[in-house]
Image (cartoon, rainbow, N blue to C red; front, side, top):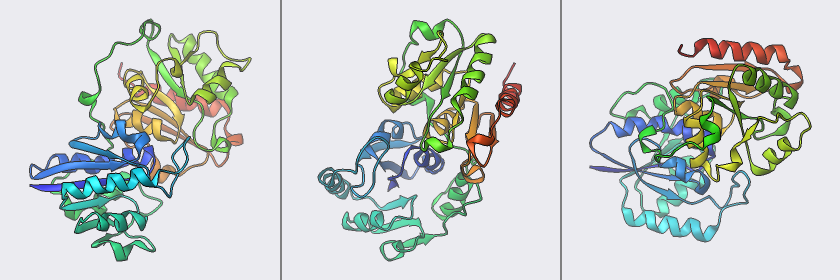
Length: 322
């Protein structure tokens, strides 16, 4: 039995991409799989297939969305716990030099990761880093192929069977609903709000409820918008963490949003997605789940028109099962 530690100390979207490696390792009966991820992504980390234990600690040199840098005290306490587990190998999905350096301190003799400018001295094996113009999931499978004994499709995947059982609130049981994530990352890459509101109106007219998703501050901004629909629902009423966000997404008819963590959560859960890349890296971070998807790509949000968005929505809905 090999004790493998999968390490992704990046943000949510990168953790979702890493899920393809967890799926490949899950199918190896000789692997006991654990995960080290950021604290804010840990509850999603438990949904990665085959993961038996999750270590949650933010790197003290990096920030997480809506948070400051991680605590050095918590980081080194987690590192001591990892050392006691005596892992045989660490598979590291970033090229940061600090991560393999600290894993060497934790006594993990075999440290495998993507080659970077400084990290080769801390890795026992440096793998070819994916190109920026290829789908990241297929690239990860190719890079880590020597350590994967099972072939799996190049799709992100979260284990829906690991989601807690829950009952939808009454407001979400009245009609099928669509998750709409209006903001993500950099505001200057987000679709204009009037265009998203026009999509929401079209969907309401077709019999859907709209569940707007975002941080509490973002949703408060939406609620105060004079164009906000009186029928709109807001996820902060029920979702307090990423797991509850994933629960709500898992029951949606489809997801509309920007290239961001929640969009990739939806894709990995098999939910159809309409993604805005305004701009982004669509060749690299396209939706890579098993479900249907449509991308709208523009060099700037100002180049997006309501006709573009409407055509994208029509394209996605044409792919939905009847």
